Image (cartoon, rainbow, N blue to C red; front, side):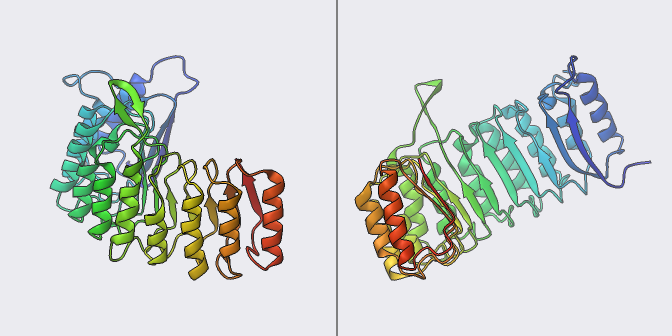
Length: 362
């Protein structure tokens, strides 16, 4: 009889033989309907979806099997390090187009080979399906080139085919020069109102050959900040925003978004290694002088360029109720340990940062 509930982890890390037989057997069980109760699937250390036998016209039997059977309970799929190609993403897009994953909540793509065309194929399936992925909350697109196809994700979000998307991760992905433009359109259009976390640290752009990359231009991240500042509702549920290790042309627009209360739920903000200087810290100081940020619990400013002047301005602008829940503060090593300790001690004596328990220089 079929399983009524199943969470499956395929772990071939200690196997000396390739996992082709395992994958073929898994595909056969899927097609036979013996895994209708599958709720979660992940594989460890085996690049499993690239190890299926090259039968059925050279296409992966597991991916083909996904397209031929409905999995009504499936809620978690982890495709980390599977070496998925653009063609593989097309097969997964056909699976979604057929409505075979109606309960999917978490979908993770890490360190694969697909790029713009793969995103086009997969998100095309999402857009063309009757309901899209109505329950999807978590989407990881990290350390590959899926960011070059951001426009197709934007189309799926804009047509309400991903209505519950709450956690979006782009860390380390390769993007095009229009990445922040498309993301900003989603913010301005009110299509990302359910978003609770957005992480996009250490983004990369192609420079020259396929295997040569460079940082984003400074104005790219600033484009997203501008969208946050100018949009009507901002991102009202966003709790985590990480843009670390991307050069910024300036953060004034980000602080304007905070001032306009377009990020009212923000708890964790990372602008690590973004090139912030004393001027940026002055802009932040103006915000905390005028209003409190009750939810903020962690502020990561480390590996930036501001010095004692910037930190002093920030701490001097604080009122006792400016950051009532801030427990972690990270600052750059451009400020000496002695100076940081002295400035923080004085701020605490004045009743500022009462819950601060973790402080780090880096």
